[in-house]
Image (cartoon, rainbow, N blue to C red; front, top):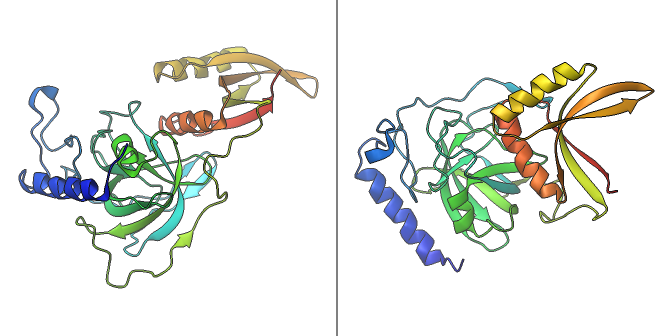
Length: 278
């Protein structure tokens, strides 16, 4: 992209100025038809209350794992970042704001909503301040999901995932006085571009059923959410059953990216299955 640190600094200053000019985080929506204060402008770091209350949130369970939201003023971790875009553009985030894939926001599993974070791409040194207003990502060992525009500015949109450092800051990017000197490392793998063997195929499975009509009900639910699924017959221990699947995917990264969207749409038991290619 050729984005320079100077450009990022200018963009951040413009974001602050833009927010200051609109009062308490409220934006004019013009012809969008959405209420004022609920839809951030492109290239903007949303500030103010955005029409929603600050909240921590209760413990919750996704795909068999429990998550415990909490206030973390000194949050500082290293892990994998991914990004999300058009599938959620214009939809509500976990705290009731509207997601604009071209604004400077992010999703995190446990930070209070909202929390401002400084995200640094460890592969190129680029940093950006983002507003966490959503929950996720729920794929593998990923630490944070950023908007498409944030991924562009951080330089990893095409790559898909990258190693980052995430630090809690104020809305101007200032670290707390007692900030940690060393971040907590949360990486189960060191290379975010790892792909499995070319002789493997990946599927997203969203349930297995003893009755075909129950599997079809799940397929219909997925289709209504925009996910094209099919029913496949299979056998295990001599017994026939029907599984609901999406795919195949040649690259596991593509399956992981869609899995996060599917889980966020309420299909919490979705899993990725990898099989030998025919």
